[in-house]
Image (cartoon, rainbow, N blue to C red; front, side, top):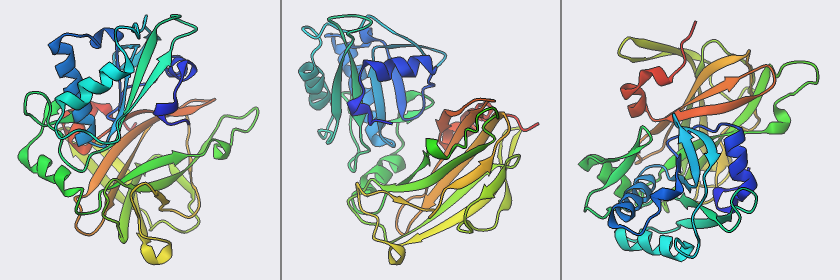
Length: 326
């Protein structure tokens, strides 16, 4: 899939057709949220800083959402009034220190609203905590920008002096085994580790958890033997199989910023009947704070896709975001 900074109108329409769900790293807003008044400008600074202080992400202005699901493109913005340069100036004048690496894409709505535009903002994770207009520091939590605790601000500032690793579940469409006339009973993916810090990582441990109802078909013997693990929030109990992958610089190269590496040498293949299932990853390295995230995906007779992603903290607040295990 193209990076968000390269999206055009067809990509936004694809989000709508696919009923894409908002996630911790993706948010949809109507074009009316871009306005010349101080209130709108302040909200922009909160939202952008919260993405930077968290894991980074993408803000799309011009999509109508309902129940956190993309429903339609709206009429867009008038580029003569709300320009890319104006939006860039709002972001860099109301966030301190000035956020680095923010990319703003103006998307011409030639099919749906000729002469109007949508905006896609791609925000990388920062190595220095970003302060919004009101002198507060915000993070992403349950699709919102909420104030950070002091220790969370310290964690962000540590990104510049220690590794800060993330895992992305990298899906390979050509390995989804879409056999004509049969449902896609298998999905294949890799665990890609990236570093958001300038400080290189020499070693890492990736723990991978998958819904206990699913069978691991193939991992080429690279994942550690599975062990049952339970996650609980309130009365909700989730049972998952736990696998572990080790990565070290002696196997390849140090893990530098902007140069992601694959933790598993060959794709992981799961047998997946239709339904909703959960995965979770956790990554650790010397001197860094452990990072983790849940993902929920849905498989049907003809396709499958990620429908939600969230942190452990968000799971504690909303355990019902994880599917029931019948």
